[in-house]
View 1 (cartoon, rainbow, N blue to C red):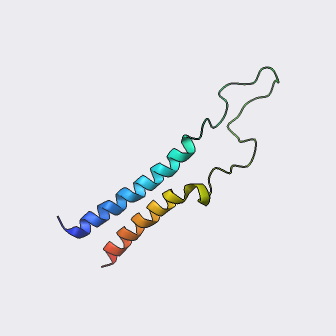
View 2 (cartoon, rainbow, N blue to C red):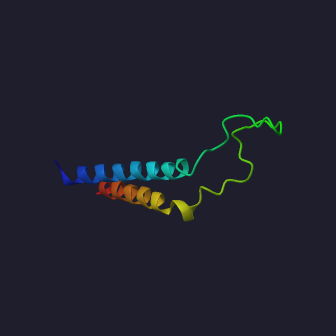
View 3 (cartoon, rainbow, N blue to C red):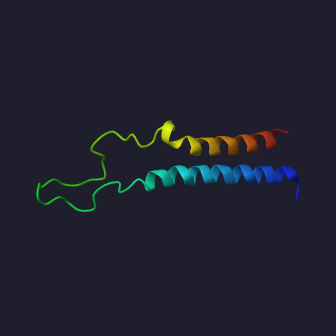
Length: 81
């Protein structure tokens, strides 16, 4: 197997790993909304957040962005030459 193809595969795996890592961080933080309605207050529950989402920021997801960037660089440099 050619070493160029190996680098492309490593780059693709880094991109996939970065996306999964970023998604996993968001999902492992907890529930996205309440499952049922709150009968004591009479409010309807929805999937819309009560406040602006601060969970997706560069500061908290920099490892995922770094993996995606590194994978993209590996793929682009190998296909350019």
